[in-house]
Length: 312
Ligand SMILES: C[S@@+](CC[C@H](N)C(=O)[O-])C[C@H]1O[C@@H](n2cnc3c(N)ncnc32)[C@H](O)[C@@H]1O
Image (cartoon, rainbow, N blue to C red; front, side, top):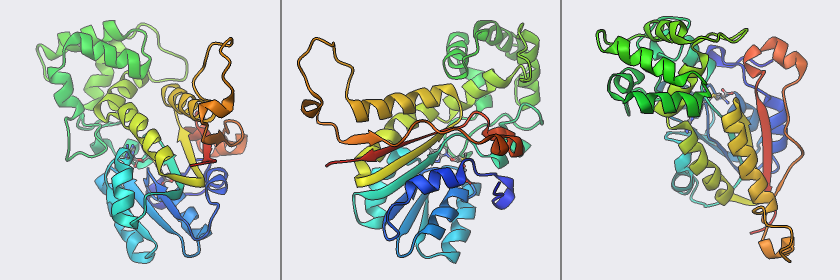
């Protein structure tokens, strides 16, 4: 277990960095800097190599700036990893890199700081933005979105099967009182949710759906995965850690498509060579060890997948 600054415990730290670093003098990207747990271990493994970190969150960026002062091989930008192609060229002056890390979702300090509005346990302003200086907060979105879109978001991104009932209750409530805090929202959801899953807060799925929507997490992931694959050198690797089934499904499908090509009807006389396959997956999906899960319960749903470019 490795605690980084401000108590984010990095998930599958050694497993992911062991798979990622293949050239001590290469160029690397950490698409989700957070508190820099993965970044620091990559830097330890590098000699002349360089690392570019990304985060949307201004607090994460301030930790990144502190690390820039300590280690001149490291740079940080406040941007989405979806924009990595342009940033890699701007910062490194090259188009291709040796390794890209993505440790998706939100960090523990983001969830634990009630002021950020991600938590259904501690009361705070209903914000949920990774970058509170851009875009629309959860409170603003909830105040203005249609009941149908609200339900769709909770269903699609939170896999909440009672999304319609919950959206109806939220809209009835907002008709007389503005919903401005996390506990206000989690109470409305809990009261409207007829099936409380064992061991889960009844607002878990609704909050997940809204958070993913507010931060365009799956849209960024789709663009970011493609940008990452394009930015890899031959022999370069992309390591992705996902935390819920929607993310992992996207990552798994993406890597499978890159490594095996599109599913074609069996009777078509096409061989792999004709599909122009440029990638392979490295090993199978990796899950955290039992001891990691008992040390850090937030790691329990994590899945690590790795893709390698094999030709240009
Ligand atoms: C799970 S944490 C990463 C923790 C980090 N690996 C560590 O060990 O400290 C995810 C971080 O990625 C950031 N993030 C999520 N999606 C992002 C995106 N599309 N672009 C840039 N940063 C993103 C979040 O703000 C958060 O700080």
